[in-house]
Length: 294
Image 1 (cartoon, rainbow, N blue to C red):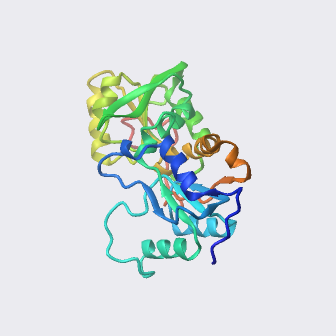
Image 2 (cartoon, helix red, strand yellow):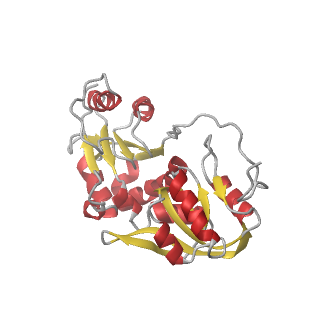
Image 3 (cartoon, rainbow, N blue to C red):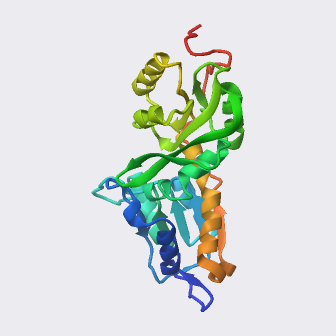
């Protein structure tokens, strides 16, 4: 696919990258992370942007069919070192598709997690929170949010409302705690969050909303909670679902940041569900509370 000639009214990739890095500065990313521009020529024109959680082959194909010049994802494509970009691997095929089709790729990961507003605020809003504060400080940056609901809710009702606010996934929302448990104070951390239980306990949260909760950390957290009144309860909202909420806000903030220059720009959120699961069997209804194993 040949490079489209840029007109005087076109934004360049350089313009968009500069705007993104004002919104999500690279130096706020965690030290282990790999964020920023992955592919693309800074002088190429950008007329259509595609937003997604993950830079999968399906997302790239969707962007190609839509005529996108730039894909912005939350998760990095090349977080860990690779030794080949041959099309015999998924990452190699992704890089090739991007380059052959003149599609740039930009990733904003933990620098978007810690931004204000960012991934944490989007998840907090979906939980019904406002006026939140940082859950913890990591490498000098605020990570996660904690705040109070306008009025107390039962745990099952809280989880139901959150489920309605999230994109549908096969795994849905997993909950640990009694269905009628009272929830007022809520801690949230989009994506994988089972390394933050100490901060959650210190926050006084009644429930912790995050994702990718592993068996042992989650079980130990609930055991600890049983010694101190039963909270925090746990809600695993799913990695993809908990972070996809950030994308619509990214679209509007990016257009605002670009100002009048964005008048001809199209920004679209991907419709590809990059959650890896397709179906689930044997899920328990809310009446199965903590301690029921029947």
